[in-house]
Structure formats: C-alpha cells, structure tokens
Amino acid sequence: MSKKDVDAYINAQIEPQRKLLKDMRTMILEIEPELKQVISYGIPAFRLGKDVVCGLAARKNGCSFYPFSGSVLEALRADLKDFSQTKSALHFDKPLPKTLVRKLMNQRQVQIMIKKKRK
Image 1 (cartoon, one colour):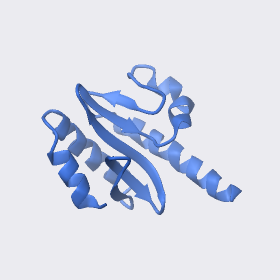
Image 2 (tube, one colour):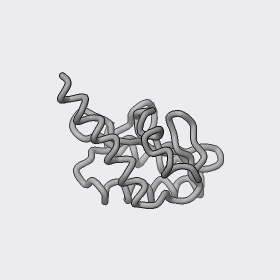
Image 3 (cartoon, one colour):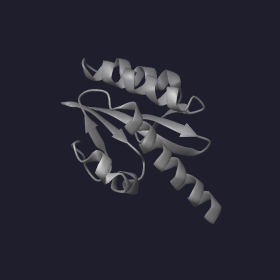
Image 4 (tube, helix red, strand yellow):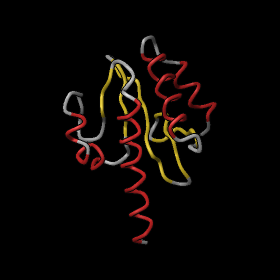
C-alpha cells in the first residue's frame, strides 16, 4: 500500500471530507516530511519506519484522526477537551490546529521510542 492507495481513498470520499483529508494530509507531512503514506486497517496512515504515527479516516459527518494508540488521546486530554472523540479517535469537521496535530504526533513518536528501548 502506498501514496497511490491513499490518493484513491481520499479521492473516493465526498466533500467536505475529501478536502478535510487532503488538508490534514498536507499538514501531517509538513510536520514530519519523512513519513511514508500507507493504508493501515483500511484507512490512510503515516508510518515512520515500521511504526504508524497516525491515521485519518472519513466519517459520515466529518473525519477522524487516529494516533494508533489509545493512550495518546488520554495523555493530551486537557488539549482535547473541546473536541469530540472516542477512546481511539479524535473527530473533526474542520482541519485540526497544526500545534495540536504536532503534539499528537510527538506524543505517539515518544511512545514508539520508549517501546523500542524496551525491546
């Protein structure tokens, strides 16, 4: 699965989800240009090495940001108080603030580094 597959997923969505996904993908890659675009669990995801840092998905009424770790959202609970969410996803109907996306991605990358050190 590659960028081409991510393009196909995004292009298959209706508006405004398609634009939201495109804008969020651009933002994620601006924050961490080294990320590889893949499809993971059926959604666009962004991988650094073998580890998924985050993912995006279209929903009926917007989109979702997946940090691929339930504890990321919990760790940033104070920053997320104004957003609708589930245990594993943050829901949005307009692009998330870049500072928030950076925090989410950094938190996930810290978890990945800690996990690797334990091995």
